Length: 116
Length: 116
Image 1 (cartoon, one colour):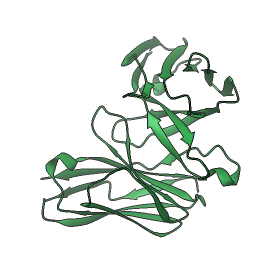
Image 2: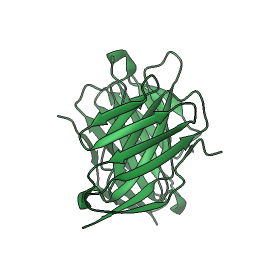
Image 3: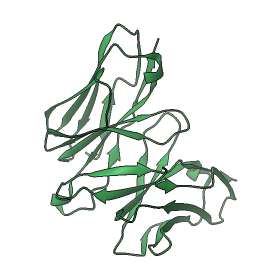
């Protein structure tokens, strides 16, 4: 299995809703990432988990809350979002340099989020 | 400050000819470079990577060249096919000292169109 899966594909939510994005990989990768991508822009890193511990938070507002329940799963909990948070949210995973690989990041298809 | 730049927003090539996509970087700490291909509303797909200890890496129709002194890399696609039409992102990574993961810094992307 060489895939990163994300659910849901599309999500529409109001500014008072609470929702969660899910990401799963079964490649044995030990690093997982959340990115945000706006139209016609490159992906922007939000969070990095390494060995299930939060390693990087790129000054992301607290209305985004990541969670890594185990080495295969990564969640992004959303609460009180703003319309400007509408974007494609991408999950990625990588083997980690300790595996001896070059640590390529593999991306999921993304969740298209619209905040009304 | 854009540390990774793709100065050509778009490139148009005839089927069967060579496509050359260029990328420049400014951070001399970058030691690992990747190319991703992205279709609309999908996650980026990893294409090919190169470590800073090499100056060339080849995989089928795709070859990446790295010129460290010029801080420049390029992706060659030969022969180009209509299915190669997509946005191509260059990305660079500096190994975060002692950690197993890497932060990717992306260029702005180049839209490649291959005409039949």
